[in-house]
Length: 209
Image 1 (cartoon, rainbow, N blue to C red):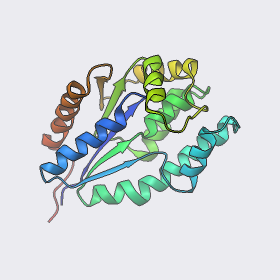
Image 2 (cartoon, one colour):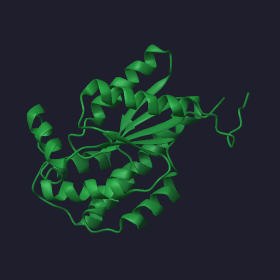
Image 3 (tube, rainbow, N blue to C red):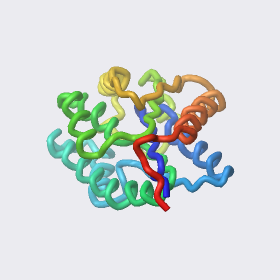
C-alpha cells in the first residue's frame, strides 16, 4: 500500500484556511478519495489546555506554552496522523508545526531553531499551504464571524510579527495562497496545489503489496 499524503493548512487567524480545508475535503471525497480532516491544537489534554489558555487573559510562561504545543503535536502525530498515512489516507491538517514556528517565534523563540527541531522530530509534510492575508483583515473576519475570542493570540501587533515569520519561511513544500481574494478563486488554487501533490509519485517510497 502506498503511503498517504499530509497537507497542512497554515496562516494567521482569519485567513480562511479552515474553510478551505473543509471545501477541499468535500471535493476529494466526491472523487472517492479517503480523507482525514484533523487539526491542532487537538481536543486532547494538551490541546484543551491550550484552548483554555487562549481564551483568557491569564498568560502562562512562553516556555510552558511551547511545551504544551509540542506535547499535543507528539500525541496527534503518533495517534492520528501517522496511522492515517500508513493506511494510505490523505490527511488535511488545520495547523501544524509551522504555526508553532510563527506564533511561538513571535513570542521570542528562534524561528529557525523551532523549524529545525520540528522537522527533525516530525518530518516534513507533502505540502504546506500558506494562506497569506493582512492580519488586520484577518482579525476583522474573526470579529465578523463571532465565536470565542482568543486574546492570547488575536492581537494585531503580535499577529503582524506572526505573519512576517510565516512569509519568511523558506521551505520547499510551501505554496503561498493569496487569501485576500474571493472564496472561489482561493479554492481553485488550493485544489491545484493539492492535485499536484496527489499526482506526483515519490521515487523514495516503495509500493507494498
